[in-house]
Every structure is written in C-alpha cells, then in structure tokens.
Length: 148
Image (cartoon, rainbow, N blue to C red):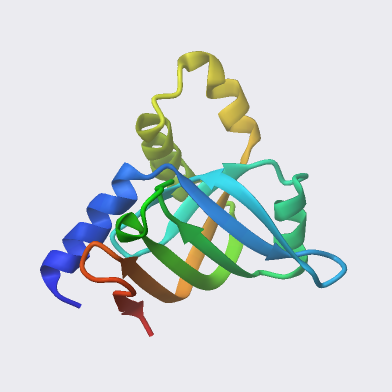
C-alpha cells in the first residue's frame, strides 16, 4: 500500500469514534456491539468495556472477531471504511493500560467525573489478521488490502 494511502487510513481512524465489533455468541451466532476505540501505528485497536457485557463475555469464550469502522453517509461515492478480522482479548498489563487509557480519555474528551467509570472498565485489544480499506471516493468498489 502506498504511503499516502497509509496516511489517509491513519487520519480516517483518528477522525472516527466507533468500531462495530462482531463476536460469536454462546449459541454460535454472530452478535455486534459498537465500541469507542483508539488505535496505534501497528493497526491495533483498543477499547474499554465491562467484563460483564455480552461482547466481553463472548470474547472470553471465543476470541475470533470481525469489525468495521465507517462514517454514516448517504451517497454511494462517500462510502469509506475498514473491514477487519482478527483476535481480541482483555489486556491486564498496567503499563499498556496507563498509556492507552490516557489516549482514550484525550480522544473522547471525557470529563473528570467519568474517571471512576473508566477505572472500572477492562481494556481490550483487537489484533487484526486481515484488514481491508474501502474508499468509493477513489472509484466505486475501490479496495486496498492493508494486512494479508
């Protein structure tokens, strides 16, 4: 992928807030949940969530996930976004947590009164195995493979 495209995807990720996470439920059926996320230069995605939430319980049983990130648009030529497949898990390393939570609080401009709630949440990581960029502004159906 070209460097300018990598930069476009990185800027896109910074401008978006929500990752639609698809997990596998206890009955083997897919379930989705929107989560606020931050990402890093290694194309890893992080979010905070209750370990008791449905998607978190699903991850504890089955870490394989799919996700998408996209803005709400109304015209086909405006469709842009990422399709992701990978593995997700809870991160319990305090060093990682401090850095990622600081970025999360900054990105979402969370007021101090949310700090106690943030501290109660578990930090999760999605490590993509496969990722594709879609951008109909380039041409209808344009796709670029970011990860194998």
